[in-house]
Amino acid sequence: MTPESTAQPPASVEIDWDALKVVALEAMARAYVPYSKFPVGVAALVSDGRVISGCNVENASYGLTLCAECALVSSLHMTGGGHLVAFTCVDGKGNALMPCGRCRQLLYEHSAPGMLLQTVSGVKTIDEVLPDAFGPRTLVEFAEEAL
Image 1 (cartoon, rainbow, N blue to C red):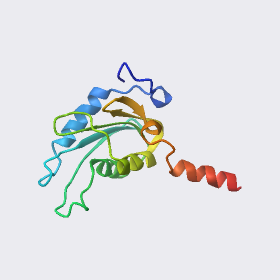
Image 2: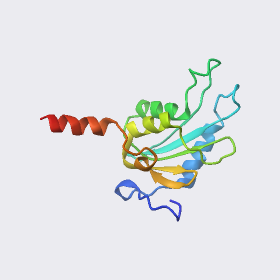
Image 3: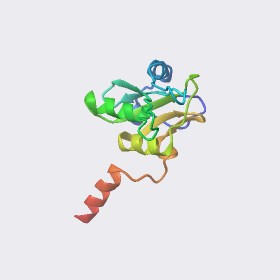
Image 4: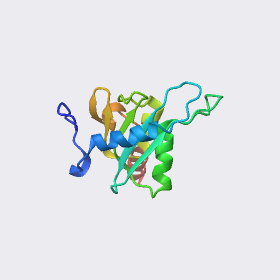
């Protein structure tokens, strides 16, 4: 974690942000971006200790372009499921990149409570970057209240 961060990893998990960034950079190098020329790579630590990654894959119609976060979540489920514990995203120059709102929602859906994200302004929790989010935990709380 960065020294200025107040965010703590869930369940005292040790996060190697440098190693996650290396994996994200490797993924970014595989991005398919013939139109925008804006490659994105992501990497995440999963609750069972796996590290997964993804890159963006463009399409001439743009609307069908797959974000790197979509590839990451597909990888999560294809390799055994679990929950995301820590996440980083890099651009073509290796700089930290903040996921868009749609992708933050996607990450929230598959996150462990308190998931950490390396952002342009330091390490933050998923709840800090998507406050008052609606997702699976909301539905569970609603179902429990209905009983």
